[in-house]
Length: 69
Image (cartoon, rainbow, N blue to C red; front, side, top):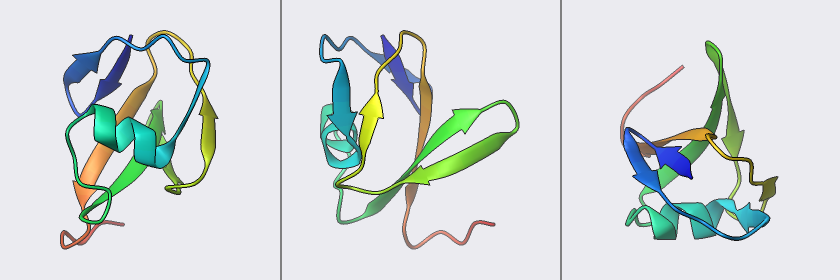
């Protein structure tokens, strides 16, 4: 089980790319940036970057048009 924004998704894969995670969450990879959240920090995940999937991982999908820092 992974979380994107506050929605949870059941996944069986051991690794997923940023694009695959956005697709599973129903977000258009051309319109959203993906971030892996750990604690108060987050790291941007590129579309072609692989992520080791562990139960309970949290991601944020943020519209590219929204300024963030």
